[in-house]
Image (cartoon, rainbow, N blue to C red):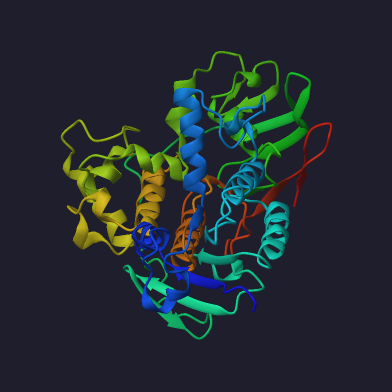
Length: 410
């Protein structure tokens, strides 16, 4: 008899942690009674993060035992492969795969899929997925999880509700406008970055003009983060390069604060910094000050601007709601708006759709398209996925090479 495999569709309000805990304790819902009192393990990005933190705090290597390399320096694909090996050594009777393809480029996704197909012959798998396109090919039983309640469905044609769009309101105008006299915001010429004997990127030419909408693409380890860190001023490797940033040739008098003032930046990890009791109104206004929390009394104009952004997002009736009470998808919309509220010269969105379900990702993409179309801010959108509906003007694709990744403008 073949192994029993399930694909369970989850959204950003599914209470996945509670569901997986019951499965692992041998107390699943009746429909999954096959897994009752069986020994299970969890394959998830959060598990990897736990091991990275353990290594960082206590210098204990678990997934990378016997290796001289720190786990945090592994690529996303290498980390997940190490976790898979570790879990299989425990001889489980089933494995829960929590969005296994998140944070992986296409090649790494394909490699992991091959491993899981082979594994499915001897081990029952429960795949929790946010994106329908990620379902593994051998799975034939389906379910969905809504607010912690599990139900069986016949296939993956699951109704997520209407395909909402961001409202038809215009992007709110900033309180102050920028005057920028130069042709380029960013110009790289033959930029090469190495660490020791290893070249990360080589001979990168990239020009970003005011108002342009760029996608930055490339596989894990191709140097996307390296290029972003050169732009944000966080990488000392920028010195000695032919690099023009926001009116300054690198190394000729600019400061990190000159760059931060004209730059908007969001990556999902930033969300974790906001753990206090922040209202949505204050979250947005804090974007004007680039602060974690709001430490000044906001003006009437600032409050009105926050309300206009909330109206655009369909949340104007929730201005005093706590940020912590939002779903993951709603938090991403607020954080993207927060990064954009002052209409920076350049807005960098680093994996803004990572971990989102299809509907939430579509809303973020719709918001980004609207910001690009209705403002003079340049935007750089970074994603491992090719997001449906995203409309960039240009794409810089990094092609990996043993002598450093090369850039191709599409």
